[in-house]
Structure formats: C-alpha cells, structure tokens
Image (cartoon, rainbow, N blue to C red):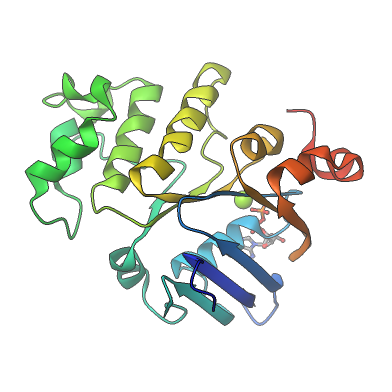
Length: 236
Ligand SMILES: Nc1ncnc2c1ncn2[C@@H]1O[C@H](COP(=O)(O)OP(=O)(O)O)[C@@H](O)[C@H]1O
Ligand SMILES: [Mg+2]
C-alpha cells in the first residue's frame, strides 16, 4: 500500500451469510481527507461500513489503517487502532451526564485533559456538563456524540448517514462539525444520502450500486458529471 493513504480498502467483498453483498470494493482515504460514499438504497453502503468496523460476519480482501492490516482485528481492536464510529441513533447514554458520557470512553489516557481539548470545539457542551444527556436538544446530542467519538484521538471518523434522522435545521450543523474534523487531525469517511451536500465538503467520492463501486473520483468532478448527478445525486 502506498504511504500517503491513511485508510486503504482493497477488493473487499463479503456479506451476512454465504451470499456476497459487496463485490470487491477498493477505496482510499488520505490523511485529513473527507471522503463521501453515496449510492442507491440497498447498494451496500452500510454493509461496507460494517466490514470496515469489524461488524460483518464474512469479509474477504484487505483493509489497512496507517499501513497496518486490520482486516481480521476485532471491532474493539480497530477502535484502539484509531477507527472511530458515530452511530446514527443511540450514540449517547441519556441517563448519564454530559461529563460522564465523555469520561466513560474506553482507552483514553489523561482523560480530563483530553476532555478539555475536545470541548474547545464544542463550547455549547461546557455549560451542560453536569446535566443528563437526555436534557440535550437534538443538535447538542449530536455534538456530544461527536465529542465522545473524538475523545480517544481517532485517526478517522466513520459516519453512516449522520444527517438522516435530523431536522433540516440541524443538517447544516452536522456538516459543519464534519468539516472541522480534518483540522483536528481526523479524516472522515461518510456515507450520505444528501450526496450533493456531502460531496461539496469532500475531496473524494465513491458511488456504490448493487455492491460495486460504479464511479469514483474527485468530489468536484463527480458533482460536475451530469449523468452521475442524474442517476445518483438526487435532489437534495
Ligand atoms: N443484517 C443483514 N442481514 C442480511 N442482509 C442484510 C442485512 N443488512 C443489510 N442486508 C442486505 O444487504 C444489502 C445492502 O444493504 P445496506 O448495506 O444496508 O445498503 P445501503 O446502506 O446502501 O442502503 C440489502 O440487500 C440488504 O437487504
Ligand atoms: Mg445504509
């Protein structure tokens, strides 16, 4: 694998049973890059994310993170290797306070100092620290989920449709948070239905259809491709 890639996925295929859902996907993320995965419903985007995270029962091919092969590591070991994931729902503990949500993250050294560093980018959470997370608004809850994911200083954040369950007013806020991650040293691999908006803040894009990558390239090129726009970018 080449040195400049943070994440490199090669010929990845697999599925939930003996039937392949993804059929040989190649994908790369460079350090500090935002990369969008788009495509039709049922194309295998979430399945690819599960394979990357170590949550798909059967996987063939290779995944390297910072040059280290992680294809056969457990989900926990991939997390420790620097792969962060923000689930779409149930991404905070509602009965714990905001502070507790940040403190219970696994594998963080000097946790109080790290919490201060992370909170510098989420000032709205600071005054909420003693409150139960269930008191947070939808937008604040998303911020907390991001802050939690950032606690262990991951190398790459994986997001599967981070805006799907949100009201339109919150969508822009989530893209704003995503856009700030590279400056914090965190690359992003994001599945998004709002492909147009997502590509606008991305450097690279991959379009999946029926478990295969049908198109990939610079985000600007994909946005300018009218055939691709018609088929895969929708009206968002
Ligand atoms: N847990 C599962 N068990 C079996 N098949 C699944 C499971 N999850 C998804 N699939 C199938 O895998 C295919 C791809 O689904 P998915 O990866 O969720 O697509 P996308 O995220 O692109 O909408 C679909 O045909 C879906 O029915
Ligand atoms: Mg999905």
